[in-house]
Length: 222
Image 1 (cartoon, rainbow, N blue to C red):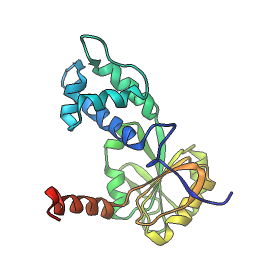
Image 2: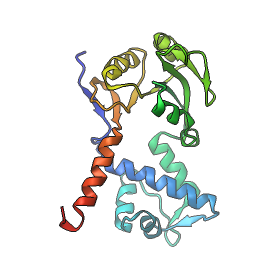
Image 3: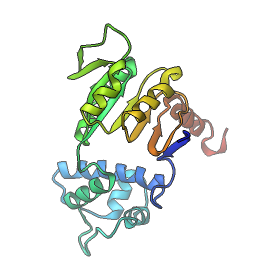
Image 4: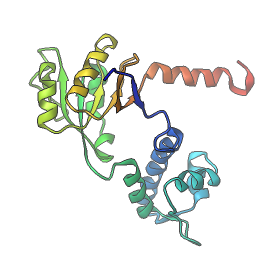
């Protein structure tokens, strides 16, 4: 198969716009916070206000996946948390391979939010000999030469790429060959993947450019 840009999850998935899926993640975080504080129910208006959305937007987003509210009650937090997790696929545990243990890779290994949301970095890979065989944040670092072997042996489904841009495509190709189904690419370069492999690109410089654009163009004063 000739590689293509892959199935970018910035596009529509099964008729559901990516923006809706992004808001689902935001709803989930707020619902989890409310639940931890002992709040059992929330209205669409309350949930929307916490995130800067209208109640109509909340209801419209959730309506893509069914009916979850209760007349006179609103949404039961625990019930909606379970529903959103099922929709997002985080009601199960996902094993992740991280390739590249530079400054960004180490930061990713230390991020506790992955585990809370059902993602476990099962193996890390790097080409530098001094890192191989070490355990960083409880994750063993393997030689990049063993990537395919370890991914298959540990039944890892997802990959994260945190290598320099010139190596990103080669790493992506190897992850795909090993059976990885989805990749988050932190390298500041566009990579091409087969259609059946989902891709998210995270370029932190682009994110800063977006916010700088918003600041300089606030109120039309660009």
